[in-house]
Every structure is written in structure tokens, then in C-alpha cells.
Figure 1: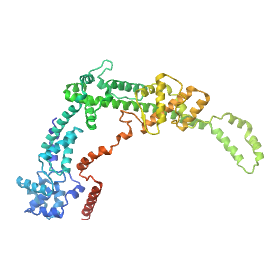
Figure 2: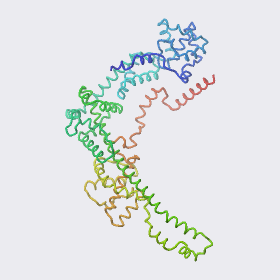
Figure 3: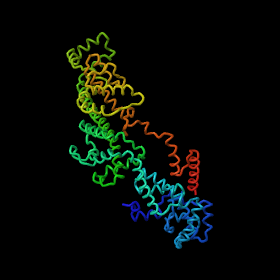
Length: 537
């Protein structure tokens, strides 16, 4: 579909006519000041006065004045009619002679401080549309952005078709510019590798592009291994090193989206200038997405085992509580005797032995249980899943580079040690391995294993603490992964003052607000006083 054909006949009619108006817009735009009223009353007849008033108030609302001024909403005409003391019916005959309406509009534009389109404005608009087209390819969105730009620049909007032609030119320019910016990355070898993404692979049973687009359905070790295979495949193609920073982030997102939606055959039919930027962007983005998916599965797999351990702990505590009911009843009877001040201290022992009985107290003592650890045995329950976790944890730690922020030094050192243990197959944790990152509720396990000289138990508990700590660090952002988007360094999401400075002027111009805060506050204060005055009247 051509850009200028994106709107239906009904949509075109709405774009050329008066939009729907709400009460706030009615008050804001269709309130005549004293100077406005003096301007419109210089026109001769009541019909012209009312017609010019409608044009004057409509201009800053949608940024243009519809040809059929007489079709203005009744609320608009009624408000102006009441202010000017002219009957609403006078507007019906306005604009019968087109030259009269256009002459009036020219005077209105001059009085309102607006401009009509000229070569300089067209050039500025083309530059604006090109910059936006590098970020967004939707013609409807670009049309709306162009209207907002002209409105904020106080420029009379041209016809819909003329504007759509400029949108089409901007989109074509954006495609050409995209090719020019990435062409240096597309060597003959790179193009051949990209073309192979669209060729069915006998081992995969599909094209590599389709294989990369199939996400996991569970957080099982097999799913983690599949994502790691994808990650290794992408790294063999150096997808993680492709630098596309010369393209805006939105452009990269758009191109990757196109690559995911189109079939391999559809991409093969596209000319190289359009096909290769799409495939290159999709390849680069897939390297990030697969890395994020791998880490998410790592998180979910550990969390699944942890949730199962918590459930077992809850069940064990419930069973322990049931088994302690007899001991609790015995304690209540003992306390009843001990707290009775009428019974002397020397009589308490004999009273307990005679009233409760030694046999009953010996039986209760025999049923005593060891006091559970601080976590009620959760880590020991999680230890039962060690073989499950070792099906994927070594591969994840070997494939992913982790980095940490302040306060994670010991944990990062432990992750490095564990990665080395996985790689070498060593079983014993080094004596100088850090333990400061281990939660207090789990520290007792390590102390007990060390005192007992149980190297195997110490390794398993320490390993679990490292894996869970790594999972928690990824969640909190204390640990991040270079090349990831979901687990990136939180500081990388912040816009630096140097990067914001040039964008600030354009943004404020687009929304029609002053750049300086003091000026913006003064403008808001004036708008508030104007709105309150309208409310009182």
C-alpha cells in the first residue's frame, strides 16, 4: 500500500474536517479576547464576523481551518455567537465565495502570528520527518507527528495529500540512509552468512532464522541448553559484536520486528538494500534476546527448585507441629504446677513425678527432636535438587560474563571460583573462597560442614549459596551482564546531561513549552489564571 493511500475515505474526510471537541478545548480555544473581538468586528457583515471568528479560534486547535467553515460544531458556533451577539444561522452562508474565505484566512493567519508553508518551512519539515522516519516507519504516526510539529511551529497545515507525499519521501529517504549507514558492515562473507539464515538446515529441520525465533516453552535444563546452543551459534557469527549504534534504537527495533514477521521466502524476495539491513539488525538483536532468555530460564529453573524446597519445608513444619501436640499438653500441665505459688519449691519435683508421672515425662523426652536450623531446613531441601541444577548451571556460568556493582565483590569472586571448579571438575572449595555473601540463615550449614570436615557437604552448600546469590543479584540489578538488555547495568538506562541537552530543545519545541523552568512556570501560571477567569464567567 502506498503511503498516501493509508487513510480510508472516511479517515480523509475526518482529517479535512472539524475534529470532535470537548469542554476543555471549547474553553481553551474558543474564548475571544478583547483584541480578538476587535479584529473580527472589522469585517463588515455579521456573517463574515462570525465566520472569521470561527477561523481565528479554529486555527490553533487542529492547526488548520477546514474548507467548510459553516460545518463547525454547534458548541463552537453557539459559544462565539453568544459572545458576539450574532445569530448562529448567519454562519450558513459564509464561504459561498471561496475567495472570500481564503482572503479572510490569510488575514487570520497574519493576525494570529502564524505562517503559511514556504520553501524554508518545507525544508525544516522534511528534516523533521526524516529524523522521525529513522525511528518510526508507520505512515499514520509520521503524519500525526508532522501535524504536531507544524502546530507547535505555528504553521498552517497544508493539505492531507501533500503532507502524505512528504511522509512517503521521508520513509524512502530513511530506507536509503539505513542502507548507507550499515553498508560498511556488510562484507561478502557477512552477506553470505546472512543469506544462510534463510536456507533450511537439515539438522535443525527448519531455517536458522525460524529456529532462532522459536522461544522456550518451559524452564527445564533442556530448554536452557537449547538457548545456549542458539547463543553459541550467534556468537560464531559474531552477532554479539555487531555495532549498530549508528541507527536509532527505534529503527533497530523496527527492522528486527520486520525480520521476525516476514517469512524466509519473503525476505529472499526483497532487494539486498532492504534485506541485509533487516537480517543484520535481527541477528544483532537475537544475540541480545537469546542471552536475556538464557538468563531468565536460569532464574526460573533455580526459583522452581527453591519453591519446591519451600513447600517441603512448610509440610515438614506442619508435620512437626502435629507431632508436638502431646509435648505441648505436657508442658501446659508442668507450667500449671510450677506457676502455682501455693506449692513450695521443695515440693515441685515430687509433685511433678506423682501427678504427671516419670513414665510420661521419659516418653516425651525420648520423642524430642533436634532444633531445626534458622531456615527450617530449606537449604538442605534445596540440596536434593543439586543434580538437577548441575545439568545447566556449569554451562550458563561458562557462557555468560557477569559483572557486579558496589558491594558484590565477594559474590563475584565466588562466581569466578565456581566457574573454575565447574571447568576443571575439582570438588573441593578453596580454603580462601569468600563466604561473606552467604545469607545469615545459611551460614550455619557451612560452619557445621567445616567443623565436621565434610568437604562434599561444604561444597554443595557453598555452591547453592553462590547460585541463589547470583540469581538474586540479577533480579536486583546488583549484578549485570554486558551485552544484555534485561540484565544490563542500571546506570546505562540513564540519559546523561550531555545527551539530554540537544534533545531538550527539540522536545520543548514539539510540545510547545519553554525550555527554561522559570518561563514554563510563568506560562502555567498565566494559563491557570485564564482558565479560572473563564470558569467564573
